[in-house]
Length: 157
Image (cartoon, one colour):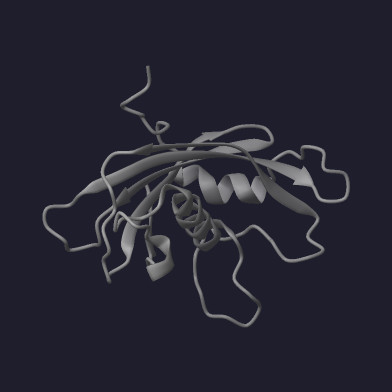
């Protein structure tokens, strides 16, 4: 099973070639991770069973990026509708997980275009020490339904 996260493109995401700049792709992936995995602020009505990580100041555990890989398949042109980011967990280890992504044209656009594939390895660490911390049972239970095969990159040598 995959999560579908709509991400609105910003005018500033585009470069002189009129497509999303490669450096901005990291921001798009970050936005999708935040929406999918980070708890909403207190008092909001957002409902998402995978959004269980506490990223507020003073949190006991934090997630650090250990690795990212992006495969650009075709440039993302300017669109007003949010792009559709499909996300899943490619690997759930002891203290780390691999988040996989496929970035598609907005929902309802025909033909559906796959723009980008990506993967991010996150390591859970204790905020006070910076040392790896095992993924909690709560996190495992929330993320396990979204485990699939890791992203298959086409252009590896």
